[in-house]
Amino acid sequence: MRKNKRRKTFENVEVVDAGAKGKSVGKAPDGRVIFLTNAVPGDVVDVTTTKKRKAYFEGVATNFHTLSDKRTEPVCEHFGVCGGCKWQHMGYEHQLYFKQKEVENNLKRIGHLDLPEITPILGSKEQYFYRNKMEFSFSDSRWLTQEEINSDIEIEDRNALGFHIPGMWDKILDIKKCHLQQDPSNAIRLEVKNFANKNGLTFFNPRKQEGLLRTLMMRTSSTGEIMVLVQFFEENTEHRELLLNHLKETFPEITALLYVINSKGNDTIYDQEVICFAGRDHIFEEMEGLQFKINAKSFYQTNSEQAHELYKVARNFAGLTGDELVYDLYTGTGTIAQFISKNAKKVIGVESVPEAIEDAKANALHNNISNAEFFVGDMKNVFNDSFISEHGKPDVIITDPPRDGMHKQVVEQLLQVASPKIVYVSCNSATQARDLALMKEKYKVTKVQPVDMFPQTHHVENVVLLEKRV
Image 1 (cartoon, one colour):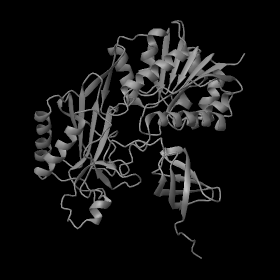
Image 2: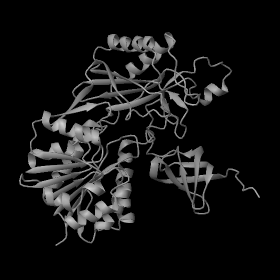
Image 3: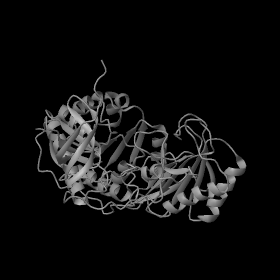
């Protein structure tokens, strides 16, 4: 017998909270949670469900009876379709409230931790145009809006340069203006699209695996430098040089003009050769007099200004006097390690990505930092007894793992090393709470500082200071 998949409608649902992944939360008459994509806490709405699960529904608000006082007018014309800035319709002070609430809930409910008073979340000075890296995709069959579908006008221009529609790998929304990266980002993207259309350069079709233009990446830095990388699906020397020469002449401020020829099934560039067409193959970011060389494959925090604030929190929590041996686990390109090096006796950075460690070493050399060493390898394999024996027992450990948190073996090694202080920087307070729960018998949480790196989204960073129990 087929299951009943008919959509349900619930009327006058009060939206009471903001939940995971940027969705808001209401309650169905039977008590089940409803996750909504287009409502704000405080709205009273009619809901049409899109998914039914044992414990919850997913749905959309189809009629608004009462609009929340937490609402604000979205600034972007693409809001609601793009999916990149899901909280643009919520006032920034309310975004910060729900981010802080999420951190507190995760630490209490998942970690079951005894917490000190949590410091109010550190908001971002810039709420728009704060990202230093953006990636756009080309498509020869762009996503059509509902208005376009309903109209009688024949759509001739189906080329797009923009973002993937959420959950649809082959559908691209054409972006007219993005509010995430400073100019000349929008100007460069629009010029690339217009020039390609005028000159017959073909846009990529991921289903057919054909077309010349694949992706466009732009990086900017606080020093005013700009990197532009065009990814081509195949080599067409005439069209490639036509576009790149046009960019070089039209935007002389571009510091690094790069390209990739990538004919494989996916568009990741990390296993591809990046070729410098004009200028340098890198740009520089600067922080407190330190310069960080960033190439096309480098990892760097995507909000430069808030990264500085985040690192200052980590440094403050570490409480360094200049006599400490510090381990920086998951060091990436060594930004935190170098940022704190002048306050420590020595810093040891560990990271699994070889290219990141090469960047870290090169940046340390460039910055004349002689008290930082960097090692490459899987954390659970490298961070062991023999490593500690060789490099010394750390006085302070800073750990900044990926979203999945730390491997259990790494947590076990931290407990075995038993350094007096651990500073845990996290982009996912749920996995952070899980890890902290494993350490609470030996460590107590003494400071908590959420930091907002990504305004208009639900993402939030959190920094915790752990001190060894006596």
